[in-house]
Image (cartoon, rainbow, N blue to C red; front, side, top):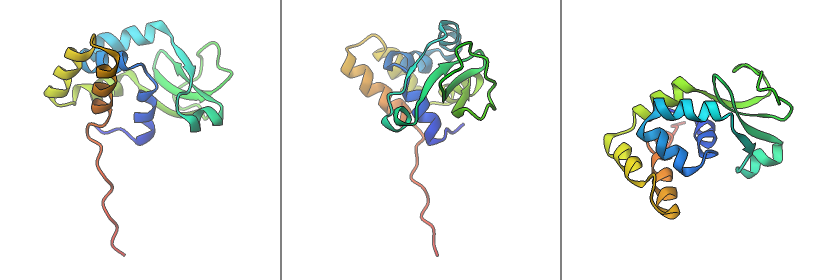
Length: 135
């Protein structure tokens, strides 16, 4: 499974330890993140300037406009900039190479700098440069 750039940016809004935990055991940690109902101000400066924030829903994660304080928006709501369902998140993390999942398991409880580097490496997995267009 591949993710769009916006979906990767959405995942990068999570804490490094959360990304590593998802890579290690996605089924367990998707439920944990879902049940915690977290959200927050966007780290990405463009999203922050646009006035959207990360919200956790029963169906997944979204960068969305303010105002959904009861977490009632559906996945296809036009207020969302980007969405990821829990099953999409699980499938993507499960599709990572075994060495990256092992790295995640190892670095999840390490120093902050090592966690950040491991999380960045995992988010970069599968990113390919666009094919040049011949005119």
